[in-house]
Length: 274
Image (cartoon, rainbow, N blue to C red; front, side, top):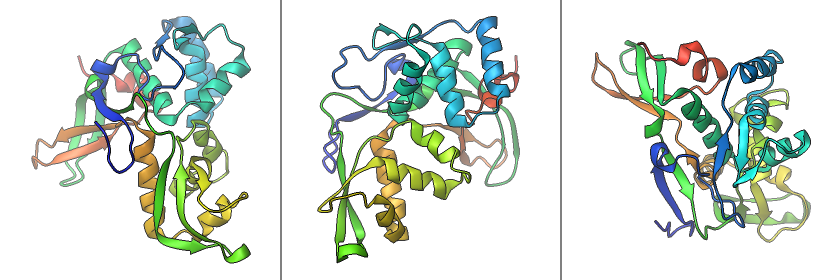
């Protein structure tokens, strides 16, 4: 479908239909597929060693994909040098990396994923709920989509230097290494994540030259912080990491974010009851 506001060519596909194809097409690549090698005991040992080092979640995902990816764009990936592997992963759009990580779980362990949580409406303890990964909705960018979109500030800001008025910025796809940069900054929280996302997603401040993104961020008002974050999230596309659950007690529909940390996603606790 065509989004008339941003001119992005996009569509929503479920994981079971998209399968091993990147949701955000990399332009210039005819083959958008990827594949993994089998997760055997040797891979289990190597991933356990990665986990023991207690890396940030961004670095953990990067390391696991560097180990497990067999082919990318129809070309051998596991034969690349380690530096080339990590550079490739870190520069890819966040939506593609998240999708490949989720697909790795689906490919190696199946669709069913156990979730335990408390109902947000009545506090009923929901245990052993089985979510199905193949029903995850994935926002895709296909064909001749726009790499950059424009965001118009609801409350324009003025820079101290030169009294330059900023009304619009241009946003690109966020690279995966935003995760690692944010997590290694010393204080990883929601505000820090937004700050790093803005810093590396804003590609141009319309009408202004020079590196002024940091000063621009300091001037942003709350309404633009949230709408800009929303715009960037929608532009990035990728998988929707939420499960829809009806509470057996109050019958309300709750939405549970899927925890994609190792133990909850790949460990024994992620397995549904037999």
